[in-house]
Length: 402
Image (cartoon, rainbow, N blue to C red; front, side):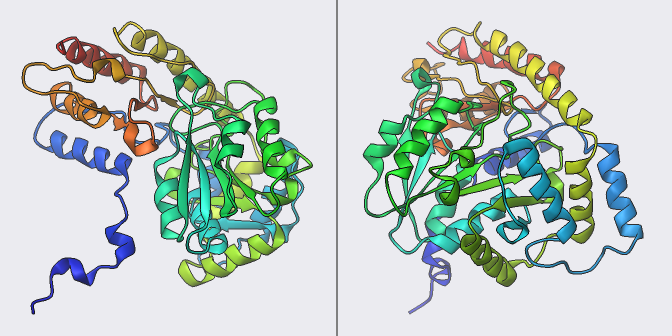
């Protein structure tokens, strides 16, 4: 019997969903290659360049010979800078053995899932969630349990919702704040409520993704790991991509209980080993030097957010909240479900985003990828001119839907 091509692949890859953000970005590039003027608001990537002083630190490190393998959990110099940063910015106390540097925060999350999950363990994921959480948990053998909060809750789950979702199989709760895709930021009281719930369930951990920490418009970022009743059961994930515009550097890190940190280092040692030497040197410099470029970037994002919200609220049928961080808007567009332009029928957010790409030549990401079928994500990590033109096109296209 002939062997089909599908049978050569593992079940885990066949069951894995492609990243919707990457898929939409590729579709936009393909359309642009055909000669269309496409505005892509799909990727979560700052449109700013890495600050010059950070690039200079990398160049100096290269010239100083930092081109060799590094210790798997990271250079001592960087881990020491991360330890200082955790205490300075988050009031979190970690020693160096609790800090692991990885090739991006995404790898840190994958390390945690591979280190902690057995087949059938459940992970409560606060939804809307970052697109990769769901698939990484599955890859680790876990069962994703989304706990959803819609726009009426500002996309933030309550402690009671989490309590109701916890079972004897629950291993940890996973979420981001500021949140991708919604931009919502959990307050002190909201995080305390979650901490109090988790603390009552022995053996349940928290994995807090704080990659957007420095793009927070509340001026009051709270780390859930600071609450005494869960500090020994919290893994804090962070990185350099968003706050320092270092997406291509692939540099992330975690602070965790010692046993979990050691397990993550063990896994990483078999997959990638340590992150780039010169990148780590630059990362240490970034954490301990001038934060003015990061502050300026945050202010620029805030101005864009205000502009985008104002323009989107002028579009009939769009429900738009007021996100307090990151660089995303997550409008509820369920008003348009069932409507048509005479050719296309909008049945869901997938159809809506495809309609915008084909008819407005604007690339955005369907909310279904984030566990929210009635929404779509706009990244406003683009110039004001591009954003104004994109929203003008979106408005023009949706007004044709009747």
